[in-house]
Length: 291
Image 1 (tube, rainbow, N blue to C red):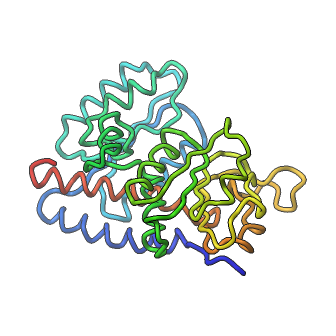
Image 2: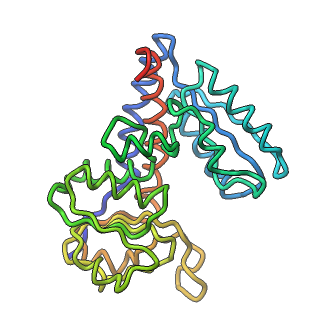
Image 3: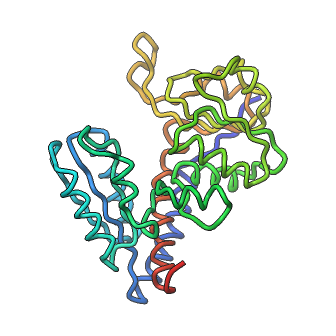
């Protein structure tokens, strides 16, 4: 058996085309979606992520604003910019790229963003609304995973789903979204005893643990859907050393799984796509007078 590949690049291109149409319609009504991105420091990976997000905005017809601050920036200056952007009706989404330098209280910064412009879905109110099944901005990576499952015709209701990882950005909201979709969900983490015993019974296995090639074929139920959220590099000594890989041993797993996302080209492009979707939705809400 060879797994069906769940192509995040192809799905992302389709959805971004639809979002560009929606953004153009809003712009024609005088409500062009706008996203403001704040980058603090000199983290090279963060700079790449921000550049990709800004480029994606431009292609989708979303106005983008980028604000750069040095590594030693004062938190008060960044908080003042967030307050300014909160009050700007032309800005519908505000994103502060993480991680922030050590002088920042990341929680305080994220909470300073207006809940109506929290297109990353990290504000406590949006998290609370998600947990209660109310309309909210969902964190972009779990939201992207749900879209992959939806467009891949993967049945979620009644499925046994296992999420490996319990971060606030991926693991916890992923578990909530799967639960709301009717799955029976188990969340595993670094303290889980016998991880393989859990992963081997999963109809849907979502892996977000941040360890290269940690999930092998022997840990996967035959025919399962495997969603690899990891973004790592093959270790030294591996034939593909230095190239991107996920948390799942893709080459081995695809011989067992029924469907699987590749790395790169799986969940990654969908994360940015859902950021665009949240921004367009925020603009639509603003044009309609609020939530």
